[in-house]
Image 1: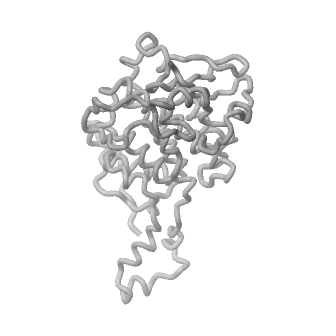
Image 2 (image 1 turned 90 degrees about the vertical axis):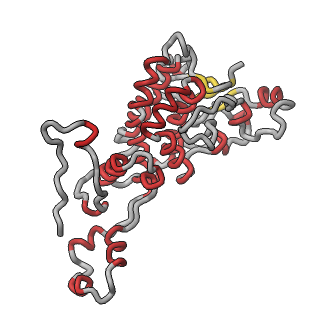
Image 3 (image 1 turned 180 degrees about the vertical axis):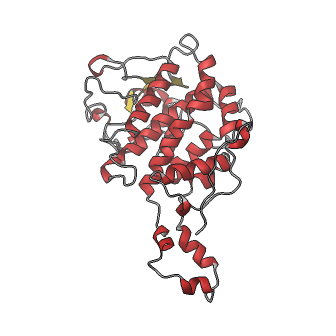
Length: 321
């Protein structure tokens, strides 16, 4: 069994070179408690723009290697089911994979997107956290659970802090090796809240969004993750699907109220007033991780999850005139 080479930076190495990955080792060769985290890191370092490979759920590596060998190979005759390498034949848990992807996504949001946003997204330029006609109310710093308007950059930092805190919470995720079924409800809520950062950057700081996307393809990775594992309903993905990060879409209209409505009418212009009265407030997370598409009666909005003092949540969307 070959010992994997130790990767370390050498004296005089450039930052762009000493973290380079020339070949991707098999997942089974990573002998670590944080195996999936290291594997995702290697995938990103190999090619950050290959989002299909980064998000794809890994297959059984050892069984795949044995299938490539001839049936009469002497290696197959010498191998027994209880050999050490056969222990690496396992399937990656779907929930653990989603957890590690969301954890890495929250980590990569800091740079380059948020660091560049901090240079032009200020309290004076963006006094409200908006994406088109949607206004997001922040409760991270409210008293007794009261909602407060928050400037965009503060809302972004509060959202990222609360997402990081939830992902590292031993109560929500007691183990990174096995995610309990009760914790799966947090995935959709985390993805939906992180998606608002991309939405604000796209519709209000397009040049920053384009530059960060060209460097990291982070939104493309987020979009692939949410679509492959059904984390965010399509009506909440307000950025156009045809956006590929290669050019500026001047003719794209900001998201309107009906773009995220539960049952959007066909005629947006004639029914705008009706939708505005019918759905004045929508909670993107009711505290139990259910999707907004499951809301059937507007009268129950805001009553399923009573806010608690000191509870950090940035999950409220309202229509802004």
